[in-house]
Image 1 (cartoon, rainbow, N blue to C red):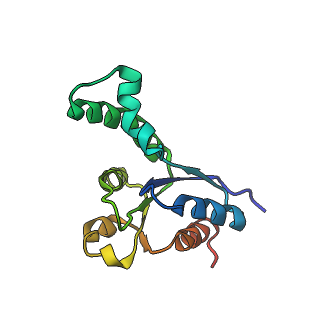
Image 2: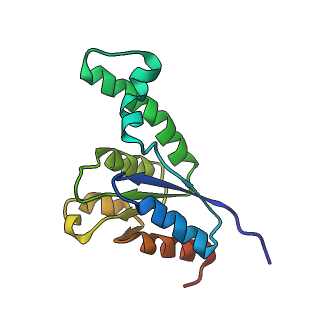
Image 3: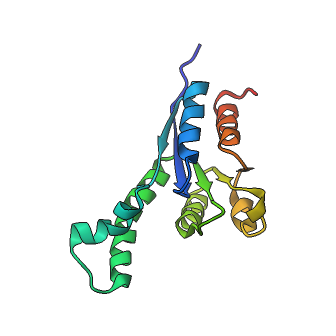
Length: 153
């Protein structure tokens, strides 16, 4: 029996539900050789990292600019290191960062799985067009990963 290679899976997008935890639980339960990676999901830390590290900004544009650039260091590095990128789009909030991550992953040729409800399929048709699979539940993502890694249903 050969030892399985570890897969790095980046979980991008929506931060207001427990979808990441559901995938982590499913991966663990299935015994998949997967390391899960993600952006900083603490909204306040993510928004304020630039000014906390580099100093205050009176202009909100420059505050956001600093934070976005520092967050991009993490995001781009982890997407580049990933074997698969999962991008979650929630129904309540617009995840512009998830759309950017999806485009970046596609530009790098990373296999991508999008995760969203059928209600927003039309709005995401171009993003879904770049994905290798479109899932509606975290459990489907785990099953896709299991099949991709093990080759069995």
